[in-house]
Length: 605
Image (cartoon, rainbow, N blue to C red; front, side, top):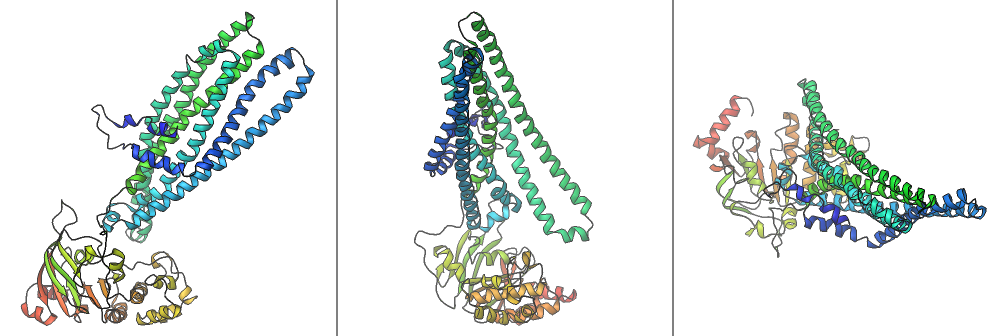
């Protein structure tokens, strides 16, 4: 039955020419099967829940059956024995109904919560495993919304909707039995109007799904906006743009309000329309059934028992509209979830990957070209470069020259479009990704730290590191002294992104993290460019300790900080224009000389 409701209105996602509407992607049959297979894993609990729902349905049917003896035996025939028996039966019926309701609610919500956890875990694992290019093209808030908001809506579809589908289905069966048992002729008349009540399910279900998709997309955009403005609160205040950002936020909430109200209208209309159509059926039953009682072909008890069953029958039919609304919202959310789960990675590991080993490694770029996508110009063009084991290679050039693009190819954050990147003679595409990245450390311009203790942040480079190893790494990174000054030392929580630390302190903890990993290849991506001169001197000493004996790529903004490099290459427009030592490049009086002269004139040295 769940598959039926998942399928309802799928044809509505196609336009008149038969093509799918990209603004309203449907939940394909394959995805439907995946959801149903997830539910079927818990078939034992599902079967027990179904038994509980049958008990509820049977109790509902019994309540309708009891109307006849109450009316005919107690009120008309004044039977005292029935006066004692029927209340006892009623108590038992309500007890069984309550027991069944509790059992079905508990069991189905257990299944729903399990599925929520599965989707959350799967989404987080998938997003974590996808290449950095996927993270860069998506909004952070949108990805967060998938894990938080969308999975909750799917839970409503899987647990609440399934409960109602089965409970209402069994209730309808029970009421149909009572109706035809009491008066089959009157029952046939009642079903003249009943099919009309299904029309609003289709009509309003389409609109609910459409507005639900828009609501979820707008909510994801709102989450992204909140993430950006909270992160950039300092800039907003300094530039006095609080009013501007408040207005932007109000525009987004207004859009969300409009979509929510459209969804409310669609939901709110479905029930009254069905009630009116159901009312037509009830009016017919009162006229035709009343006529039969007056003519003596039926008793008042039979009529009221029949009428009660019909009115109770229309109730689950009416609920199907709300049930369909819940399913359509779930379909929209499930589509967004599966869009992420079915995303394919461009960074693919071979079936039999090789393992990288060694404490000193060389790196080679063999006719490497790279473009971020087919529509943009190449970021790197025919790069030929060999870096010897233990060599310190500095990469300089104007912004957009391709420096970061080049070093990102080493750990396979991106793959070369043409050519090959080799480490120790092995193509990085043939290596195990874990093995490759185990041999690479990185320190970036923006220190990336976690809201954990100092100890845990350093240990991120080596999860099984001992306390002694953590202290040694901190000392080598010139971080030990200031860490000891913290209230709890290495156990001090540093705040979100290390917000409780200065720039120099954050960077030295990042260096300690790279130090403890002890990887033979090191990438320094403008690791000191955001620091003041005093902090830079201390961090530079720590970096020298870190680079010792390692094959190092150093992207530098301040050229005065790379005079220790074994070799310097100048990248411009994705190509290597010059390479050599500082003195050799200065003697050429070309690109490197221009950069040095420019920085000297601006006092950046």
